[in-house]
Amino acid sequence: LCVLCLGIPVMLAEFSLGRGGRSDSIGVFRTLSPGKPWWLVGVGAILAAYLITAFYMVVAGWTLEYLYQSVSGGLYEGIDNAGGSLRELFSTRMDDYISTDIPPLIFTFLMIILNIAILLGGVQKGIERLSNIMMPLLFVILPDAGAGVRYFLEPDFSKINAGVVVNALGQAFFSLSLGMGILITYSSYYPANTRLGSTSLTVSLLSILVAIMMGLVIFPAVKSFGLDDEPLRGATLVFVTLPEVFAQLPMPRLWSSLFFLLLLVAALTSTVSIAEVSIAMLQDRFKMKRRWATLTVLLPLFVFSTLCSLSFGSLSGFKIAGHTIFDFLDKFSTNWLLPLVSIGVCVYVGWFAPKNLLRDQLSNGGAIRSRTTGIVLFIIRYIAPLLIAAIVIFPLL
Image 1 (cartoon, rainbow, N blue to C red):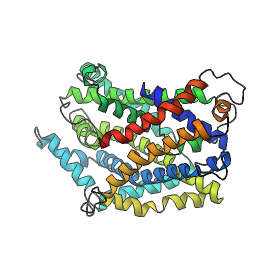
Image 2 (image 1 turned 30 degrees about the vertical axis):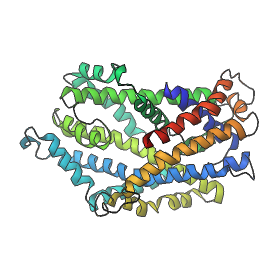
Image 3 (image 1 turned 180 degrees about the vertical axis):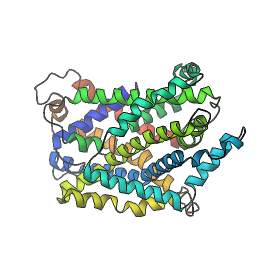
Image 4 (image 1 turned 45 degrees about the vertical axis):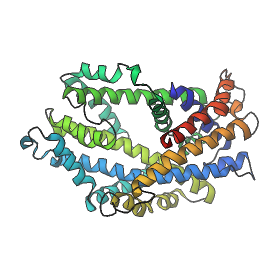
């Protein structure tokens, strides 16, 4: 419901901007409203994307380190002697892998180098296909998968409150990559006959489907081994709970390696997509060749991502507004910049964009009939800004 009410309309606003302006996140506003300050919304999107790239590259480095430790067997050393304290063992491993200085830096640097190579030379799909075939086998071998499916999908309406609704809005918002210029940048390449409405619906439904498929792997696995009393979120779930699950399966190194390989592919596609926002801006604004634009964007990450990585080690005592460097960039970009950029996009498309921009883009210049334009415009004007503002304001209350 949140995807339908918030995600798709805001996505259509960004699609319309991108294809209507045929430029980067700054250029679309300069093209559509020359001489007006709306281009600052694009600056916010690019800044948010770059800050996210800086700290997300560290998370991607953790994933690469866990893949290496899974393949080499280091992640599962000593599990036979751990007894019933697997959770403590993997919590300690997580601290060792993340909270030291040098090893996380090495894997973060490798991720930056890998991103440079991909952005210069393209992305290969072979690993994704392999993972799509192999990962569902994990679901088959779990001893109590049915209970996990019920735990995951059976609704408990007593749990629904304002906080849950706001979290659902935030999940819909961030899972669709709204507010960071990605959709504007990539839609600028759409041909004139692309149906933006059906494209947004397809992307949104696939996002939901992927989330459900991941839940159908993770929750049965966690439930099967009685680990559902743990906090099933974030880094703890990925780097502690799931390795604990794999340790109780036959061939734990195989399943762990496969999972972190899949996660690495997801991390790579994310970092590449986010970095492309800044690269496209440099190509369009400053007429840089792609090679120099890519290096200009990614080489400074060797400094910025280092600071983010060290905030878990030797810089853990350094605080900005009470947060480590990593947490500050995370909260500033995702809790503030992205929502504010999306509110700016909605206000612009809804009230200040060239007349009939949304209608023309959704109907492909009148070539197709769009029956939902009025509803989408109403949501963009009146509903989406309020819902996005709730994402920002509610945590402060």
